[in-house]
Length: 311
Length: 89
Length: 97
Image 1 (cartoon, rainbow over the protein chains, first blue to last red):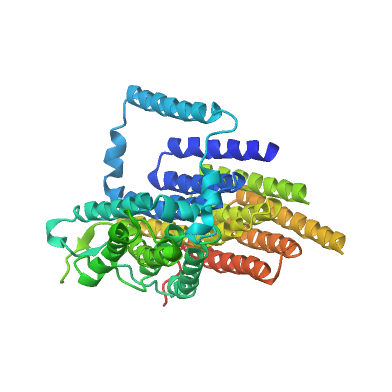
Image 2: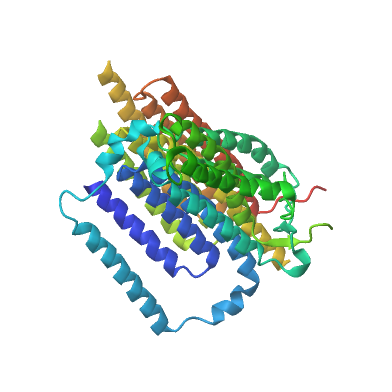
């Protein structure tokens, strides 16, 4: 269909430009644009859950993360630009990317008709999980262990980022202190937008059991709102050695793991839910996990500590 | 009706694509942030139109998130610019 | 009745797309950043508003309609502020005397 072809062409065009962009901030802008267009593509492919995740994490929060990195690298950008990679290395990277892309395209296009899929079984057993959204059912019931591992990986990434703190700032406040701007514009809009954003985040999380949405998307919105408040100078980032912060980060994976282990005793396997209580169990996992992921994502974007914790 | 909505979506996406030219060329950094703004508004319009054309109400939620996160990313860009001005002084 | 609603939707969405066109042309052709910003902000917020109006005629009930209006209001709020902030990067506000 003409619309789809046009969209694909625009997506490719933006991707090529992003790679070729010279300045880092311009490239990040291209990346965010690419993410948005990709969200459109996912909606066209009838995958609104993926579109939500792409718009929220892939485009929004990752954009913030890249901008933070670009800001930190700004001091060395002139000297780094001087050491350009040799043309041979760039060519090798391009060839490798093309090979991987062609391989994936070949696999998808050469699938037999009808393609092998577990979707009918997912649909058939959906009411036993108590959920209405098959994507959430896969994430939280059929393949809950993947979700648990993802949550733990995020936490490990955060630990890795914290380990980049210089010695004097160990356990301290991430990022520089933002001050509210002099005419209060940003602070005003943050005071309006952040509560709305928090409501939207909770709504997306809650609605995920029967419609596109879920804990990751809701948590991402909450994280973005927290970072927004920090950027507007309404809040300061917490020092990373504070106990309440560490508790908040850990409570999600801890509850997840505890319920998983309890599954051995109660329902016969790791992360198995007793059938009558499946929805309750899933909700009990989802609420702390959403809070933990929101905190983890926000701290990932905030970066390594830069200011000492007690002074 | 659905065909018309698809056509309208196509038009909006074409507009956004044209606006990306400004992203490419824009001499001032402000131009690039403006193109990102256009992307946000145009993308929201395209998503709302698609939601109707494809009978997919989930896409309205995507538009909601996009509106929020477009604001977030734009402010992040402005902040990143401000810091660079401050560095240069 | 539904024919009338469809007709109104088509009209509103066409007008909205026209405003998007105007905004993009302004973004590309106006001589300096501030005038481009002006074109962008006015045309695109109005464009989105007209598109939302057109979709309201097709909406499947009050919650859906309210959500559409909510998206538009959110975009207006965010757009108004970000426009000011972008303008400030082009021409910093005069220090208070």
